[in-house]
Amino acid sequence: MLERKFDQMLRIRTTGLREWKNHSTHFNRYEATPYKALQQLFQVYKLKETDQLVDFGCGRGRVPFYIHHHFQIPVTGIEVNDKTYEEALNNKISYRQQAKHILAPIKLKYGLAEQYEVKKSDNRFYFFNPFSAKIFKKVVSNIMNSLEEHDRSVDIILYYPLKEYKQVLKKHTSFYLMNKVRVPDAKDKKEKFLIYRYKSKD
Image (cartoon, rainbow, N blue to C red):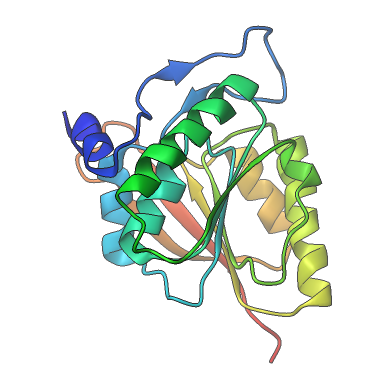
């Protein structure tokens, strides 16, 4: 009920699942982060007007649209499934009809996450297990390379965190676990957010 209520408020359609037609060892099925979980996260974790978020494996765009609506900051969604990407674009058209007053841009990009060129203004990165740990490691490496060129404070937000993702951050990066946000009344203990932070050297 809550899922459809929020979708209607944002004028988007993001419910349901989508499996890959040909089973993929690198890409996971489409499933949106529950709105209840997002509500809990942003009661604890705040985004500032200077932040810019990238959602890797954005699906139909629920997280970018939700954040854009509530925080009015620039957001970018990356999606590799062509059908899901088209649905995200349609959602953007519908959402923008009632969000014309928000000047911050929404960018939806079609392509592989590891080929996304991390911008120096990108400082918040969101993942809901969109792909294998091998791809995650490549994406995180791109983020680290960006930090070498443009030092800044950066957060990585994991929902329903995989053990392999946590190992990548622990073994191969300077990110530290900054916060843990549990979803209320969750039946599965994995229903939580882990927020990792890289501190600027300045």
